[in-house]
Picture: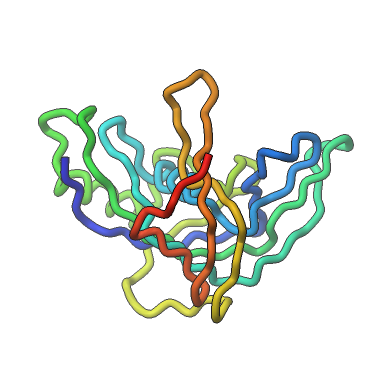
Length: 190
């Protein structure tokens, strides 16, 4: 089914952890919010079984900086510090939606939730210990922290939830002028 409106949100916070799966004891973050984490952030604003969030672009507004912290004495956490993103996204209505669920109604609910900061649950950056502050953002030129091309390597794009354990699909992430552009789905790797 169809979705409609594009949403632009400003999401920022003191710390973020988008944990790399290949490191099991210590936690080390990807260099920026991943598309699945951005979808999760949008689901914190509005979740509905008949709505699927699609991330279109992520603007990186602060330099990538790591800080070493810990949850307990046995685990080191290499988290991102002072993160600041603008996230462009839209939703599609899936076959799990009811007959009364239409794009206009859902758009109105999302706008009200953003305006009133009345979210489905508290937004966070990868882990509940790292709260995210979220606000609506106007559609205008965005100043980013980077110019040129910045290669970020492999990053998760989505997950296959059809098996008992979610299986990631990766893509080669590159910032172009500080923007991760996902409007055209990238080539996916397992």
